[in-house]
Image 1 (tube, one colour):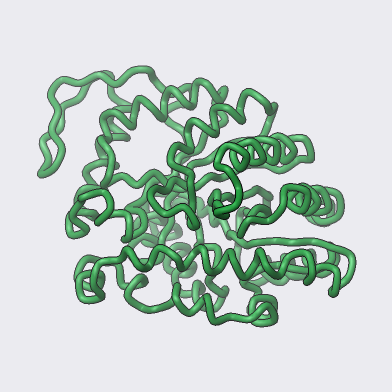
Image 2: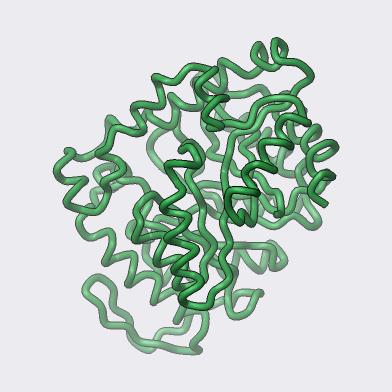
Length: 348
């Protein structure tokens, strides 16, 4: 198992956006110094409390100039809302700037992004499938033509070419079973959502593993969890409780932008119609710990939680969320430092 970090760039109203970006760059630089393997950054628009990460490739390219070995990953590019012919070149350019340390996540994105983007949710799956084919052909063929329902190009050459050949490692993520099966068949890495208990995700994990085995692909499961470390329970709760509860509230905040429930069900976004996100706001601090929605405790306690997780499924990477819910910068650095010094050595 390798260890990375995952960030949504949640933005509390009281903090200027420029200050938040400065802090994230310092946290990414620190993560490289203390030995984390990869840093994943979400792509998201329109909903400040959920995320202000509108251009993850720009943030990653900036961080790459301040770091030496840590890899970077976008989680995920929302393919149905972009021009894939242009995105292919943008990803390739970022791979060059990062010195070949880029990994690429591809997905349909959150359902609430579509109304705000003036895009039809019903087209998302077909647009995604066409865009994936275009990206792979753009990176592997000198010139290509494509005639799809939504995208068309003729005798096109995408430049620049990625530094990594044939292209950066690919990942996806989501909540629908079909996404897990697709990732397994293609040999892509799979992000698991950060706030769902293991038991809820177990059927999806099994579907991914079965699809990968059938296709003779190597599975790569990225398990995301908020983490906070400290010395004793009262201190930990005092330092992290407000931010942890706000993290859950921030993740549920964009539901006000969702299409009607019937439309979500009809268009392949059943998870968003289930009420699961809204239910997060009803969880207590104790619930979060008991359900292991977050790994909160001393380094020894969190190490034991991770070892239990390892026994449950072949997790390739634990991506910890160290910055969540407006957590103060010093607390983020504290957790990253304690994790690197006391948890990482237990898995070497």
